[in-house]
Image (tube, rainbow, N blue to C red; front, top):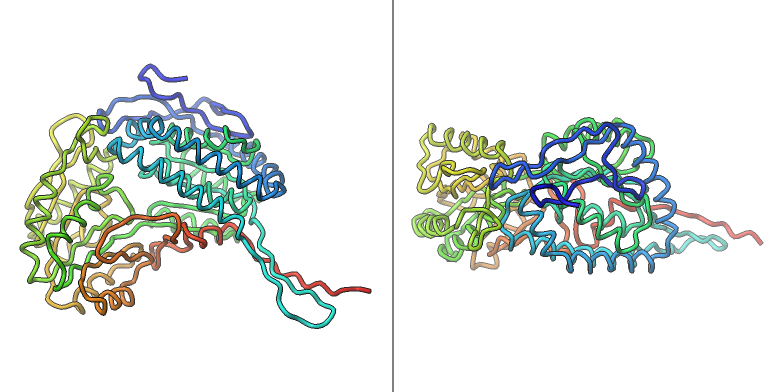
Length: 482
């Protein structure tokens, strides 16, 4: 079923059924490229949430008792459906979130790859036998933690929810997941792939609603055994505190302000091209997006010139239009943040080399922006921009660059460019980040962990570590009785 605008009609999925919700409360879904309302998303009541929790409680007993080979087969089938439907999912995603269609479709395919990795890794949730006293069998077992309450934002509308869903289901857990109200049809399309693959009713429940109301209710429920969150640092702090009051473990993948250190021996043109490509991907709305560019003074002129060239080559437009390489920002809030951060930097002496303003058209479009001379006390140097702003600063020595990079309380991603193996090792050792890329600005991959340190959170998603948060470790000491 679709709306009059051709967008899928959105429903929640609770206890094996697609439903509108108890009161019929809704919020508008807005296409960020046109500012047109293209649909409505239902908002859950506490009764809806309780039904979802009850379903997850029952679903957990069913799913954890399902043989791992059967679970893996269902998850692989879901991955196949995501691949088959990637074009359709991508189109829905672009209408809701704005990113170019190629990025959206690519995200769907990467989502399928992530699911396959986690499904296979479920077979390797090994325990161990520990040598002990005669007549005693001492073992360590890994078991699913229980029903999970998961919360995800709008910037990766299918990849974000899937990182939680795929890990939890692979470990044998059930979920109630609150996806973003701004990209609900994309999340629903993902959930449908799992259901069509044969996932039992109640194992995966999808809800939408007022964020504070939903999170407080789900976290406090005795059904919930783990909280998994991706989002901003301030909201992460609040949810972690609520989880702490309830004595529940949590997985927190929070924001950052990723430094890029371009060392004196690097190729400035190559570094600028690779950094700019990463900077303007998804209009900079990526928690690992490079966002502070620290360039050795001997390379600053060449690096900056190439970066500006790359920024001005970006084709900004509707993500569904052919040739678009950067879509709109996701909402009016992001536009206002870009204008505020740019104005503050300029007021403090920064120079805008290109961009720096909202584009004069319908939609939430902001020009790819490069600034130099941004002082250390500017808001842009302390606040994650989460948009297409690139401040470039020159440094004289690596000690200075490392000190600047590590000065903020964030520690999610960092990047470095150098031809020296010794310098690369120093960057690896001294940069305070959970993710470091050297000589490129690549994103997450299924086979390796991602996560932050300091205010950027704790726990890891991806790689063998992805299941850790969703499993408990149980020690069993068995005294053999004749």
